[in-house]
Length: 230
Image (tube, rainbow, N blue to C red; front, side, top):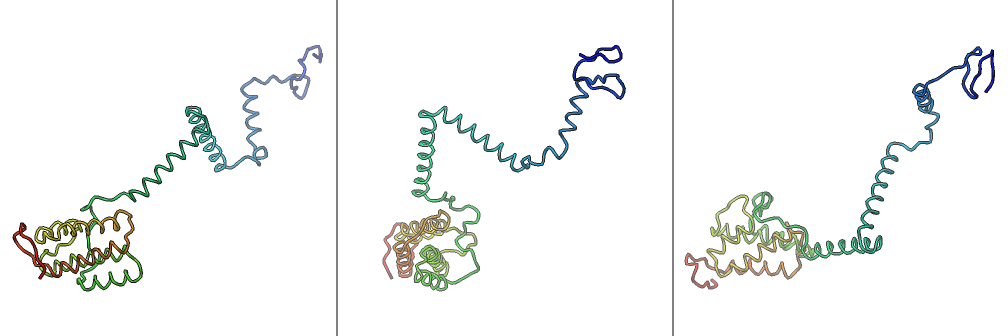
């Protein structure tokens, strides 16, 4: 403590221009410090907003991982094993089942997606795709040829928006000897068009043989009778 003009002054207390000490309360002092520290010169090397967001995100991920590993038998190693097992299970299911298959008849599942074409046009397109080894497209075009041919023979009424399953079910009532093959062909068409499956040559040849067989099959109104080739 020093004595100035007969008055005692605590060490370190700010002084005014004269010998009168300046007494600053706590709140103004804090505000003054905040104003000083808010100057740009003190924040030139601070991380930007994106970096701060990433830091917070990875901090959250780290905390989440730590909490999960603490709750998993075996700690971090046990958690890694569980994650790898789940990933392998999902991959196996995806490989076995393929992409989720939409229910037949849903909007956008129309058998014909372009303008009117004859059965001969669809057969020619199917043959071109088959020659190129494009079995998915070959299956699609051959199934369209099957249905268009049945429409041209008046065994099916031309109807926009008809699905492959609907066409197979309707044709199977007048062509019972081919009903099973028609359903199988429609399922193959749906699998490669909506289910993410990949067709092969045997799948295409089966629909090709069905198309040829249908050309030689006579329709009958008696669905209980046995069909014979023409």
